[in-house]
Image (cartoon, one colour):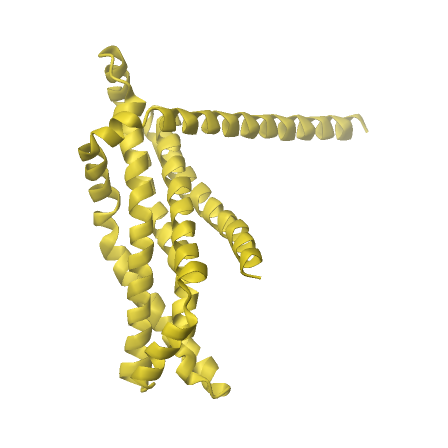
Length: 268
């Protein structure tokens, strides 16, 4: 009986310690986010710093975004045609492909790819700078590392994400057209006319842009925070990279549910 009580006490102590640690870390991340926003003026005024990070986070991610979007659109074209043909609505293939990509798959999958490729790289870069004491050297030279290192990378990711999501959706629509019209034989005019009649800029395109922007803020914040807060060892940096990918994926999916619920409520 005494051993059972001791085990229960140890479990409660472990659970309580982990809960307190998570709450403390969440508060520290929130304060870090406010610090980045308050010290972003230098990065935005010297926009060449942000442009370099846009190249690193956005332009270098174009290949994986374009290829992934193309294949996702092709799969949607195949699966959508198979389903719509059963109900005699194969002409609505363009509508199904466009709405699926613009509302959900485009922003979500592009954000997941962005977190895996650019987010992990940002975390690794900042973590290695901390490990090699470059951030400490900046402090010694009266250079704020948040202003010089963190803020440009944060805004580079935020600005890149909507463009990457738009490119993903565009390539996906092209892939759906390629499979549906060129290979299967759906009428070209019906494909594009149904899409044009069904896609609304405010409820479909604009909502997708808003989602991608929110995802960009979340992924970029997690990436720079995990890098800045990582332990200055090789093992600590590797754990920070893992946390970046896992936390970003969970944050994207959770935010997608919240944003979708609000957007559907606004459409009704």
